[in-house]
Image (cartoon, rainbow, N blue to C red; front, side, top):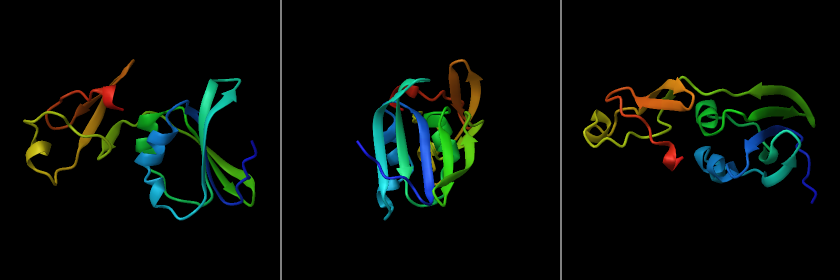
Length: 142
């Protein structure tokens, strides 16, 4: 298989295998008018298998959403066919409007305009809690 290289754009590398489509949806990549390559289950010496996403345009990325979905992603910024910058992600300390509180009594269920704010309260495994009602986010849905 041959995937063209990117002249100017972004390559998301080291995505945990099977997460590329979730990232595609979370970043709203379907609304872009540029070439996007999703490469799934690539062999990796470091990870065994991984996914990759190549975007043939420089766009703004929601780093909090990416870090929440998979904090091990490497973001490669490409210009003139060369990687000019690499960024490593980490779990964000706070998420705003990335996930939703499932507590029906939470203020965010009543006030639809209220921001969905979650804070990281534990890292092994990570636990995000609603800033308003302290309900833990159930990662079963992510």
